[in-house]
Length: 212
Picture 1 (spheres, one colour):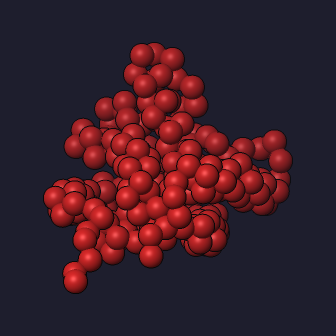
Picture 2 (cartoon, helix red, strand yellow):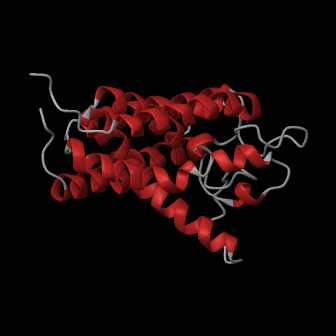
């Protein structure tokens, strides 16, 4: 007997259509290095997760971005009403960036909720934690050693700089209150200890085990 799909076919098609628009637009607007952001890695991972109906991939993406993107959503709303909290969503209100690109970037708001919905259907796979941790650490090493520090050049304000905050929390200037390598290793510890592990702990308790 053919197994029953846990994720509606229409959902898969709509998400795929969205990605078919977003990827070329982002590539042209920001360049290929933009896809090294954790949120973009999770976005692409979710595309594969949908068609494979993979609890592992859904779980990995959720471990990595549900908490940070929840903060993004809060900051987006706060910035919109004139009370910016962290500045991480300021670019969404930057008229120098194309409107259509900023509209596509609204996935930061809905993706964490979508992943939580998917977890209800697939269950949570604890192996998502080590999978995401390896992917994330590979990404931050690439970003630190091969991608530019802030600020972005005036003639290309959309160029990804300080990707995944490897040079500090500001996209305008690199942090100077500790040696760069100390910050880089501290960042890795914070990612694992303050985001990935707590997310894993919460998701493991909130969702049923992955359906095999």
